[in-house]
Amino acid sequence: MSMYRRELLSLGVLALLPQIRLNAQASQDVIGDLVAGNHILANENVLDGYGHISVRQPGNKNRFLLSRSLAPESVTAADIMEHDLDGVPIDAKGRTPYKERFIHSAIYRARPDVNAVVHCHTPSLIPFGVTDVRLRPMYHQAAFLALGVPVFEIRQAAGMTNMLIETAPLGAALAKVLADKPAVLMRGHGAVVVADTIPNVVGRSIYMDLNARIQLQAVQLVGARSGPITALTPEEAQKYAASDNYARAWELWKKKAR
Image 1 (tube, helix red, strand yellow):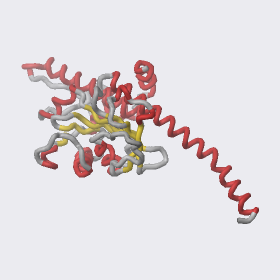
Image 2 (image 1 turned 120 degrees about the vertical axis):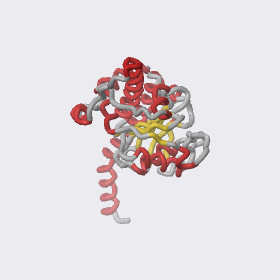
Image 3 (image 1 turned 60 degrees about the vertical axis):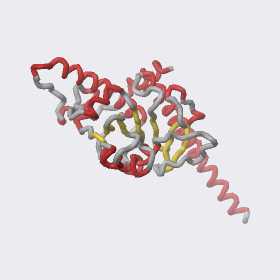
Image 4 (image 1 turned 90 degrees about the horizontal axis):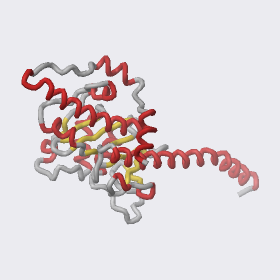
């Protein structure tokens, strides 16, 4: 190699260094937020010993980050594993992945707009997956629910199962029912929530839980009178959604989770 070419190569590498540092810093920031998201959702009782949260890898839409199989409250940066869109860990290093990682891989494959996914078993949501009562937005913090929350019936995809999304085809079936919605309920199992960022998917998961509890209270209030329950309209939801980033709450949730 000539001296001239070596100089050009050196200059090229030097020119890339700031971008390399930026990408490395961005990855560390995202891992930190992913760990925080695990702790927050555990602290807010959206996740318990089970359930998980993931994020799409910054700069590579064909990879996502998800903890090894571990209770969310116990997750650290060292537990975060990279996966491809087939749900295969890139470098497991002896760590065991979540069985239901195919929930995440299938949704990232089907939804380019989604950058963060939560799978939860939040008790308040279960009744809306096993009855014909639909989850509706009761207040502005849960305005995103006005887009609709479908119910995934696993028997329609695979007959009698253990209810878990343990294969890529089941993940694809779930993603198909989710379609373009912000969340999907899973009959007799739990729910999946999606968003464009970790703070937003955490916020949606927390307020979806609170909304479900509020709706159950509203049903109890009308009782035998069978009176109407006035949910937010799609128009109201659209007007609020423009400011729906949960930034203030995110900082509070992180402080509480520490």
